[in-house]
Image (cartoon, rainbow, N blue to C red; front, side):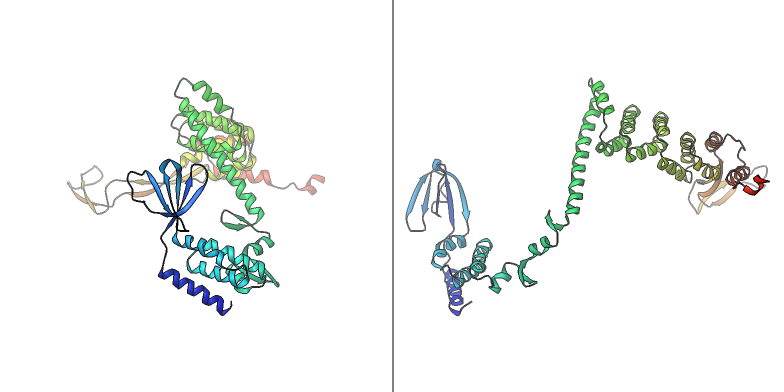
Length: 401
């Protein structure tokens, strides 16, 4: 930048700071045209006319119906429009005008003149750097140029690979589809309590879109009506995806209604899904004895021999319970009993205790009998010996003899 250009920029900036013009507006006319200038009768109430002082010193009066809208502009923008023609279309002139725009925080206008500078002088270092360029392999490149050359694309404010964008777009479509199904199911659920119930049942039972699984799962968990939940179970069974099948398995354990649980089992029994078997085997180790027996019922229906070993281990399970009332350190009254001599007195209460209680699980035994055809009652050792014998390898040499 030449000394003359620098002097020009800062002399103009100083002059502008000392004598800042009044704000200007753009008056959009109902006929489609525009008038720019200072709004002289801004405070008129009620509004009847617009009196405008134009940049050239003239004055225009417009009736209110003639003005469609008023666009407000900063004083700096008006001054920019006034002085712009006085700067020559040269490297020095455009750079000087870009610098003036920087001092006035006119970002968009500055970008315009910086771009003109590098059109006139492609290797103008200051203009290139101001526009975000840097030297990469001997070429001027912006960050955007560099990222694009590396295969990245701008997506929602971040640079991402095409594979990431494809995945995100796919997830977005799935989310939209799931939200749409949630809205449909809510509407049909409301219909179940009205004279539109037959149509609602038919709509729910006809669902076969995997995108409906998430909404069906939420309805299955939250709906208090067992009859409505049975409809959701049927819909999930019809969809039949791994996710839908997993939800049915969970429901067969956790739903409070026996009919709903058994309906889930009816559908799961047809799938013979090994993932469902694995889920039930995991539940055999539950701290809740009820879940242990419900899982055993499921394994008995699935008929998978791989469950025999875990079932044997779950024939008798030990569960912990909290017993006793009162809080530690409190006093309780003690009365004499036949086995406890002495009179009435006070005793310290140790509070509730945790006790371990063994349970013989009938549902586990029933499942073992159904899977093996054998019956060793709750004798885990006998079952273990039998199971080990089934897995013992055949002695081929003995067979030859």
